[in-house]
Amino acid sequence: MNYIGSKLSLLEFLEESINKVVDKNCRVFCDLFAGTGVVGSYFKKKGYKIIANDIQYYSFVLNKQYIENHEPLKFQKLTQVLPELKNIVVDKRKNFVCDHLSNLRGLKGFIFKNYCLGGTKNQKFQRQYFSDENGMRSDAIRIEIEKWKKEKLINLNEFYFLLATLIETIDKSANTASVYGAFLKQLKKTAQKLFVLKPAQLIINDQEHQVFNEDINKLANRVKGDILYLDPPYNHRQYATNYHLLETIAKYDNPEIYGKTGLREYEKQKSFYCSKVEVKKAFTDLILNARMKYIFLSYNNEGLMTLDDIKKIMSLRGKYGYFTKEYNRFKADRDKNRYFKASKTVEYLHYVVCN
Ligand SMILES: C[S@@+](CC[C@H](N)C(=O)[O-])C[C@H]1O[C@@H](n2cnc3c(N)ncnc32)[C@H](O)[C@@H]1O
Image (cartoon, rainbow, N blue to C red; front, side, top):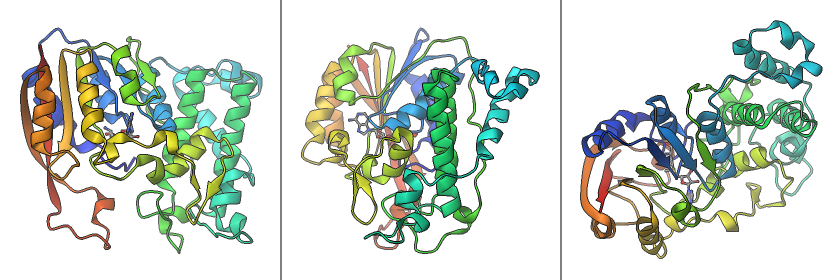
């Protein structure tokens, strides 16, 4: 997923740097600003037990799938309504279920009625985040997944797998430049194509993992691990507003929405890490409360905290150091209304070896 601050292209840098600092006995890796879950997934594949967390519910869903799901999904109960499943080997069942959902007849549900042109044409605000067909298809799939869950035809592991698959697939069909802060006037090519669910990758291993959906500062002293990896927002852009539609598809809770973009209320998801006034206090509390052997922080040279702030705060816990890497700016940071001198930024990985 194309996500602000995604570390997909920095995974090797993170691993190489972390390995230069930590001892051989580290088993528990905590990714507590987890976003898409790519960092946790990478270290899960390396054999760590992962604890993941994010304040956004769509991110929680993605991490429930990529991190916590670690065994094959059998869709045993679903055979009651899809008997053909019995003849399919377990490994292939998730593909069959996704194909079945992709072929459902579209429904005029919350997404179509509020975020598609066909559904909003007589309303105060016309919106076109998805084509009408894709909006109706996502409503039909989301409603069916919820029904299966309620009727106990799928278990929670299967539920999160299907929901994560829907979130990632629909995101690729969104009619936006990159985030959900605005939609495009004309349907772009990728938004015109009728989407087909692409099953999310299942990372099988024999470890139990844990995923939370909390404000990190409230969670920090309740989890214990060896390595804490922190990847907070770097600037004032709130994830709750930039990804509000994914939140609504994930929760499907018929929220009250407002304005041109159909934002949902997000007071409880406003992040202190996006506020110049609040960030240093929040970060200091977090660093002081973390029950870990090592703490790593990804941040760049244009973030709300200065390098000096970070050094001072992290040094409160022990020996501080950092690694750097030049990095290409995120696509949405390069839009024509904003002017940046450099198309590259310097990405820092700060660390402290806790006393
Ligand atoms: C830079 S992104 C993480 C990207 C992630 N490492 C990846 O590669 O996909 C920052 C994440 O922190 C989450 N976040 C912001 N404030 C938070 C808070 N107070 N507690 C927990 N999560 C928070 C956001 O929802 C967002 O997903």
